[in-house]
Image 1: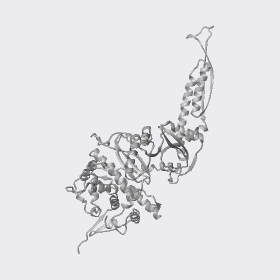
Image 2: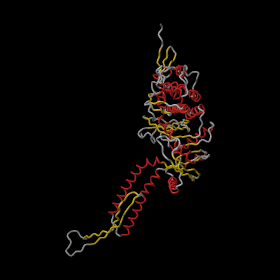
Image 3: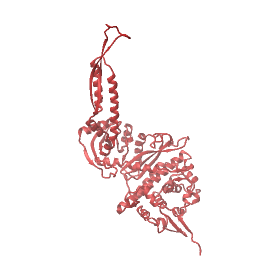
Image 4: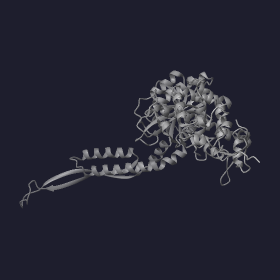
Length: 551
């Protein structure tokens, strides 16, 4: 009896991610953009980049000796003979990254983004964008490549001791990435934001996406930035920086006028954010152009700021008490001077919100003009001085209330052609956290082998590969959540907890439970495969045949 050829394949999420790579046409787009000779190349750069993305998303936390990862896979089923185990190694990936570094990698990312949008019949109405920083260890003294450089800048990782690069990224309203750009570590957000909005508008308009509204944090708004956006007709929603004098003016006006519109809680608020919102709408001129403004009051922000305000007022009171002690010790030659000093101090203290009391005290000092024992009949000189006696009382209730109001308000600025309600504007701005959530994926730790850190060019190219991986991960998450909602089903988490919004980490964890058994070349799923993992394949839009029959 001939022995059977039995092999265990740790398939995990590999077939699903590989299928998404095909939907995104990553291999084809890379091969079209890079310079390579198909006649003499043993393997295309596109398929190497595709396989590197699979490694990143399928739990390969250490990106070196990747052949060990692929040795446990059925590469024939995944790549149909176009990539073999002998062709995957660190050097091959290094050369593929070098090829990638020669092209416009921003264009690569955007083309893949548009391909995925078309494949999922998704559009673009809003674009949320922001930057983050990624710290790296090493000297990296060679000359920068284009606009990219590894250097020191404002560290969002709180590691000013390390060099860094920055990543700019954008998602559309469903949280699906559509743009990514690697930036020098010292790139200023206030410079990049308006330039990125202008460039994205040009690119996506050419692709048929018109009347897009850009949403960003306050780094978008500066006098120069507003002028750039206005010249190109870019629509936007952002936050007005407190550095503009208009910000305080609008807050004062809103509280004085009192014409607030109560929005209640926003429709799609998370459990962690059940704040009640009130808004005051107005239009004003800024930098020579009229904009819409929304003064927003948040009950959640008010409760968060309470302790901060308590500390601030305690410091103010301590400072005023020290000033009062110094003033009380200061002698004045006449009562009027002492009273003027007292009134000036009281006015300042009251402006800071405190009750104060004070009075001018007359002091008489008898002293002899000469040292030593005075003569019996010598009369002392009489010196009269006046002192401002000051007492700091409690904080005025109205001052506390006013401070809470102002600290719990922020201002949104918008320039949109088609009218949007205050609730729509605020809701879309609150969705800005979707891009911040994507950055968590990009900042998750991955151990890189020396070949990937050899040069700034390779770091930049690898950064773009991670952005592509983020795109696929986001679409996988989107597909699963959409299917769960449409089917009215739930993923059963440990502890029998149900969810319709699993994270990409959770989704990949379930898929990575899947093992395939190959018997004489026939692939089978074991009887004891995790049932939730099998459901995850279907929720992702595929069937078990992806594992048993190949792509």
